[in-house]
Image (cartoon, rainbow, N blue to C red; front, side, top):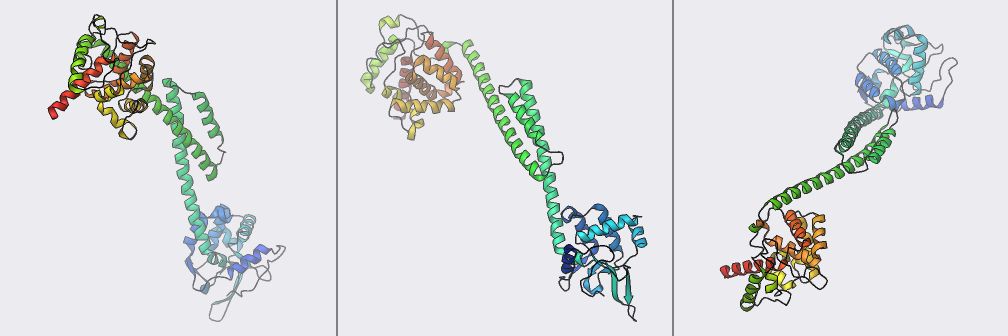
Length: 436
């Protein structure tokens, strides 16, 4: 059996503090501790990088374990094996003596085994009269049992790190493929954007990977590559949405140009002369808050022709721009617009224009179409038109296409807002009478 005293190596091999530490660890085995030697060996194989041993050294350790008679390592049964070099070489698959000595020294240095040399350096055991081993000289496996919990923890961590490495590699491969193919698709489709710069950024990220990357390198590159992919996807999605909106408005504009303008009879009455007469009637019946701007329709204006045909002369202000109407009349003609104002209320022109911007987005009118309308009609009148379009949204196939058509007619001097408002005032008054 083991004496438990500190032993120094035989011959010219020097004693080191590491050997002393290993011998001290071997003496700290908890009573009753046992381990299956082959399960523990597999854990050592998993934790090999952390333990600092080579694969050839593990072959020698495997051969040493075959000389231990039981499958369970236990201090009660003794932990010293004493094979000869010839026997150890055979079980180490014919490893030469010099190679054996080198790898045995590696196992000792790693703290996995401890030498217990005899006086002459030979490996053997002394037995008592009953045949039990009383003292043995060779290699002690006690450090394996003393460090069993540490080795198993290192093995579990190695398995987790290896799985994390595998998952990170897979994610990086997929992300790298996605970025490369998205850039290729953008270039093939001629999408707008600085794709040469994005390609350079992609190559710089890939170039940061070393030949044998660790988990830190992979994680850093994956984070940057994921951000680049997200940026590319957002840019392409924005371009796709713009193309869809433009295509839809283009189709609606062609539909409007080919359709009969006379079909929009509810929003535009026959002429300003008739509209003026109806306004006068409405003033007497409903007390609509109108001013001189509203009743500016004259016989001279009426002689311009039918408004539905787009030929009438529109009322203009002093600066030649399209005249705006009182806010009260706009809200009476278009009561729904108030729901989209700040706090669900419209009390002035600024709040009406804010509500019109909300409605524009809701109805799918592009910012460029609304900006063109503001330039042609003025901000107040463009907001008024949006309120009218909201009020009759169920009768208009495309709000964006219809607004573009009104903008074109405004620029040609063929559109007036007054008949549109009066038609909606009349329609809403008729609804109120039916409800009442």
